[in-house]
Length: 294
Image: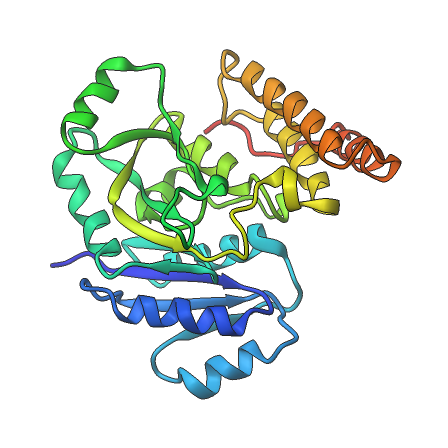
């Protein structure tokens, strides 16, 4: 019997983009078995639109308040898992999967010699170039694994984002759900790093989605106040167990270089310095920000 796939789309106040995403899901060559929209307490009538225009086609999970992408994906994955989905296909409301996207993801496991728990599409911007917010993080420390996968048209992953990520049920069995505490940014990096510390995931380049943002932005160029979450959540990851001791210096390097670039971009404005200091303060607060290694 074919494995079931539930698409989980997290949305907030972008119902026009959401309509495009839902049309792209309906056009998949390999049909999605269920579409679940997680509405993060939108105020633009998104929930009513789903109820009125997509009754019987799309299920709605209306959140009581805005819990960010992290909370939305946590609850969406939990609901799909509890309903028995074999695979959960994660994406934002501005993700437009091309017609073959799901079929290509589901074909990939037959080309691997390790059972994949995660499969990741190529996310491009509207001009066809790779979207800088969705670069795959490749497994670089196991040359033999990389060569074997490349021979089969795949690449082994270390991290990925939630822009067209296919998650196998067993990943949730073994590693749980994304962390709501992250709110936005790096919840997907932490979760996929947690899974792929021990288990396999692959980048599937022939599965393509368009990440239809206004610009091909980066965390530095358009984040503003939200850069706080990059600082805080990177520190959360440094304090957690999704990364090995040998990998964590790279997180420190990313934290330092991205903070410097952010300050340079904003001309070292005191407001932006304060954002970084607040992120550092909150990221180092006592407590366990992430789960212990399973």
